[in-house]
Length: 262
Ligand SMILES: Nc1ncnc2c1ncn2[C@@H]1O[C@H](COP(=O)(O)OP(=O)(O)OP(=O)(O)O)[C@@H](O)[C@H]1O
Image (cartoon, rainbow, N blue to C red; front, side, top):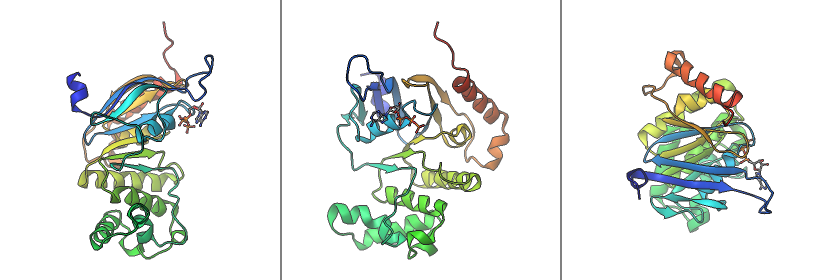
């Protein structure tokens, strides 16, 4: 085992997937090698259909790779794990439960009950997400951005070590999207997690992440792995930093003018 693998929290080795196993069917994702370190924030960008969600589902244990392996802290991922929280594009809140009960629902579903301590943690997380005064509201009384925040709090309640986010803000308007991105960074700073964040937005990836995996078009493989050496905390001013502009240009170059293999 290499030193890189020893310090990796999430380790992907030669990961690939083929949905259709017939010999001439194309791969969806091919030969992804990536080590994500503890509390690192890694974003994944790439053209539509390149396999970003497929990759995330393999890390989540929702899909077993047909090639290679994913491991979390040296344990192969073979099923969904309790220490991994997932946030999807839509919060999918239960319409008949209020905000706090939605947040507590996974515990109720898993253990049949929740404790006073769990409620206290839910209150604390809702406060951190700026939702204290909405905890008794029903989902249809919330804006899309607030619903997505509730989805994030729900994923954080079980205190997962790893947070997987699949285009979590793509249904939101641009202003809400930027704000909720900064809110996520604040929560990540206060409750550090290892984050894998799928997005279509190059700006969002650069604004949030420590490193960015740029995927090629299908079959999605690694075009580049870019370190984002912008200072934290990131703010709305970060986008004026010449490094920010240079990084977004580099990624656009990869995606719109991918290098042709020799
Ligand atoms: N369940 C499935 N069965 C067969 N093929 C699938 C399945 N899910 C995804 N695919 C195919 O695998 C490829 C990768 O899909 P995936 O959703 O992972 O890409 P993506 O990069 O997340 O796409 P987008 O950016 O549009 O959300 C696509 O060609 C898709 O059609």
